Image (cartoon, rainbow, N blue to C red; front, side, top):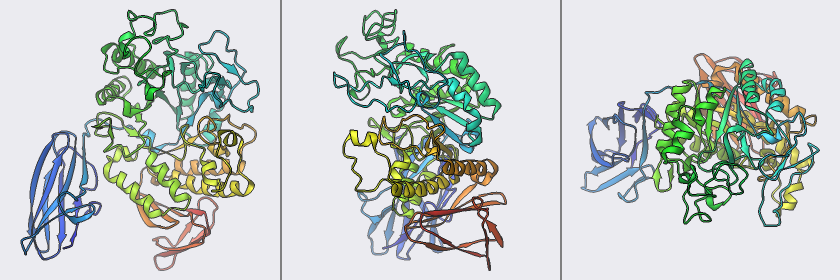
Length: 616
């Protein structure tokens, strides 16, 4: 008993992938002749409704049309097949079998009523960890919240060991500032950057600033509100926008709102149940036992459903979200979006649209965000009313696996699954990257030998790649950067990756930018990629096709109108020869200028190990 249905083939399902509400979707099944009836089985998850749609027989196939519901939905579907001998089988993604064995296909139905700003996905993003990017002066921590220490030298080793109480406080600062970022805007413009994504910049007791102390005040070590406004103006003058990190699931225990150590003059929730902020937190009982992010007591969790908290963060006339958009920000990235209620995210989106219609809302989600279940609840991030796009950790994980010896077919499968599940604007509006502040440095991961001695934090703190490891890592990184810049979504550089920075997990991935000691060859490579991405619409918003995806070989074609860009890559340790369809007689590698001649509509390429071509 065999049947044929490919959800990604428009002969079987049209249109491809996710659809807007109310769209008519045609399904066609090509079974063997012994099938006498075919019924489509559907489950609408949010409406919690089961349905059956009989398909009509025409010649050698069965076909039917489904009208997508008028409200956003996730539909799970498969097929029941009846055979001449009276038997029944169920067809799902894993083939035919029993009803219990059937793995359903996913049909995303989204609202297309609101528009997605195109500037983010088409452009290039640059993530900055503000304390470590650039400083213009050594700051004075006197009078600031937290027990801060200052590194006098920019290249001093960071602190990473627990204190006497066994806690890692992250209280050592290097003094990177908003003025420092402003001073490097021309450098960033040279990389063709269009979005500056800043890790938290609000007052905080820690160098990472994810434990917010005051949402309405720039950390004094970074500068002032006027410095932020100036940064936004100067960035805009260079064609760049600024995206802020919104940490709205928890605050710091040392904060104006919780005030565990009494630093702030107002009564905090930890000091009195009469505090205006007491209802923001959940105590069991007050004051020592309270909900905290992942149980970390320095990060007390807030109750996002409390009206006064929502008013403060989102809906009030001078809310946090509104205030910083008015100061010049063009977007928000939502930290730990899984921890935020759906209607909380939707309300942020609504207020952002009211305040600045072209602003962009990005969510931190580590998996396929179209079907994510968090805390036993199916999430609705991409159904049209919440985030515009998500951080694309699936891209990073699949790319890293391929670059380090995996099969390109696996990369294609993961990415085509996302393309099928995500609304097009979300797929083309994802934040793609090879590394972030939450992952080890990509050069370290790509170059590290399996037998490297890195089994303790002390060893990882000072480990640097050998010359041989670095050579392999740089070759793989250049290939990974090619893929990053060629792929739909915003290619995002984690600060310093373009300069060859190394490091393992937090905090070793958060070193200071090596100004004056960059890897110039790698840096020039990133500049070239940025220029190509900026110039070629096919790389920004063109269609994507996989011309080859097997073993170490991965060949992509991006096309916009008549403009075609081919990206041919070999991550394997052996040379690879591929033959590709090519309408042009002569093509050139945009990275080296080397030219290639196609004969008879075919282009034959031999790619050395760990190398690639970007053909135009």
